[in-house]
Length: 84
Image (tube, rainbow, N blue to C red):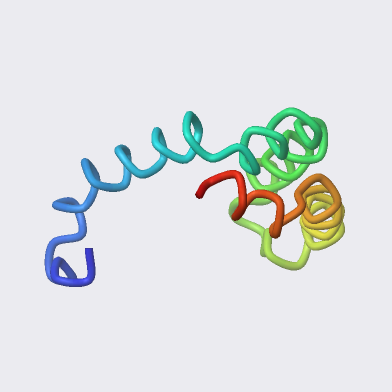
């Protein structure tokens, strides 16, 4: 993807494949999706609501909540062992 700096649209198929792979084949991501869905929706809603009004600072608390939920729902060492 780094080779396509001049035309980032060339990366769209690769990005879509990566996103699908993560959704279906990464257990940690699946747990985050399940356990943190409310936090994720809240953060996405905040971003949409503040798209033209500095969403980075306005949605910081929602992002922090999502990050805490995500880090609490995964065990990186266990996920690495399971992938092997």
